[in-house]
Length: 281
Image (cartoon, rainbow, N blue to C red; front, side, top):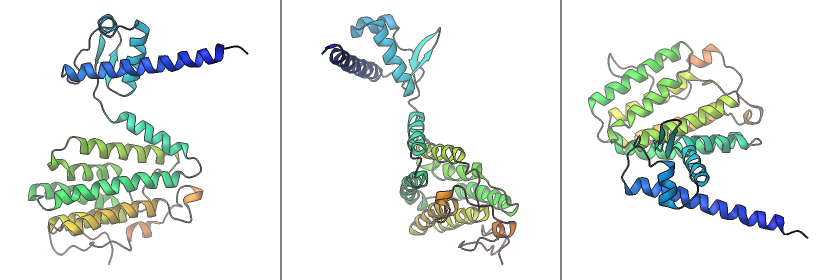
């Protein structure tokens, strides 16, 4: 029997090991030289000499690192340090979810659960020390949510703005990137499956009003409960148990959109109190 297949497998394994080592060496070079995003990397010839590898090996390694946003190849100009964004994570999670063709509802629920745990912990840090200026910004966003809800319109951009604004004061650059990553995965998968709108915008607006009310009172446990209720409501409204297997939920009527049955804080006690009714008596 010919030894060629076995030899080919061994050669491929060696090439993979070499490629992995070159990628690690390039990343270590970036770290050792403290190169910031956008900084130029050594030329291919310089990398070949310093790493002792072929031009083809260098090029393959740089292509792999570009897929991870660790380097950026600008054809005709050179190679630069990338942004090291979470785009590869978004792409990987999106593919992972869509690949579960028999149970993408469960896969999306897992993403929501991870984000729920993340935000429950984050809001614990925010709720005790949020100031009036930050509350005013959140009030403006929730007010626009409520206006959209009265018109029966979904407001995904406002939803995202609320959550990003909420955690700005933490000063943690990774937080908005992680939130955006989970946001993009959820909406990319929802769009691919045809789940393109919030079936109950009035309820979504009320959930955010509940979160804001707890924040105004600096009620940390209450804010965490409101956040958890919000996320579990997303799952329940988007994928009812009797419809999860059949795709997106059926359209609902205008009256149902305007009458969120299980919202907590929906009543305005006076001008500027932040408790605006959504047409619920």
